[in-house]
Length: 412
Image (cartoon, rainbow, N blue to C red; front, side):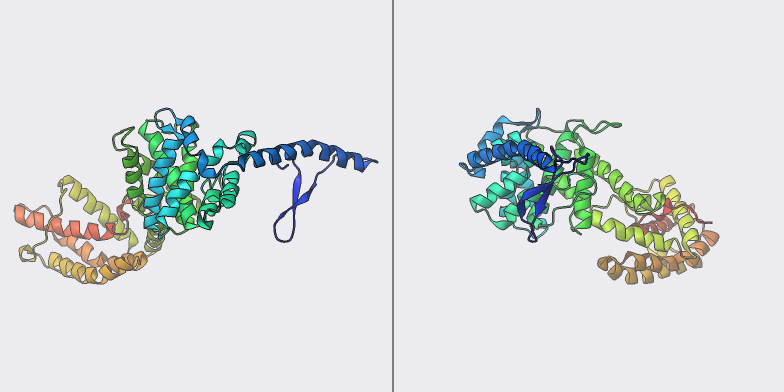
């Protein structure tokens, strides 16, 4: 009625579909009853067909279609819809365990999720995909969590579409999209230009929206790795988890640019490769507040200087500071200031209070400036030089617990 005939269906006060519809004519006819009869005559056979398919499909349970999914190819190298359903069910159970959902229900919902593809109703009316599965599961007496998940796992279908809300539905929806992303990337078929035949950009944005808007506390890198393990028996690719992660971070950056964060603030956080997308906005908000402080420009410049010094010195491993090796008052003062601030910062980090962390670290400004004015970092004695590099490395790493502020552009 809606898609083909552009009719408006009518619902009662309880949201139940009624046996009426509204249509619009582009002429002011003296015989409106003829228009009414003509539209009824068009839609009646299609509704009759739908009833026929509904009754035919009702002779089987939804789970009776699982085996027949072996006949439908998902992707030539990635196997059938049956193979995909098995992978998604394992991944959905894994996700459910991490978001306090019922893993067994998530596993079963994933197994049933594509079964309605094999019904006569969906073969005749493809737009019933997902909807038919929900109604068949309801008729089969499946648990409410599974019924809801079957209605939600395709969500979001398009930009701005509603999201799955039930925990089981979230687990299945995430698992399905992640399996598709990792599988297609494993074949080297990532989107290029405007070509995206597997709708991977939409899948990535869907995953991120589900995590962000439902405030899901989950490790994205761990999920991608788990999906890669599930696909390892049929396809292997180098660093596919990293490739998919980078692809998703590009989408995440776009989300935050639209929300008004500047490109350098996005870079300062995303360069840390955060595992939890839900943590990113807190960090970006903290950096945005930090750059308003009077100390921000000086500390940003100092961090850039420290980063360059450490790179030129080719410092890769963590160095250990030895207080006994300090010679100058400026380095001793900086060391003690840093120790005091670290003791304050530690509980703030555990609370995720990133704004307060950066505010505390901003108290290093005077000591850092004094250090660079008075101390020769690259001293001739290796032990003295390495100790000073260790102190700078420690400062740099404290900031990196929130963001890499050396990425920020000066505000003048």
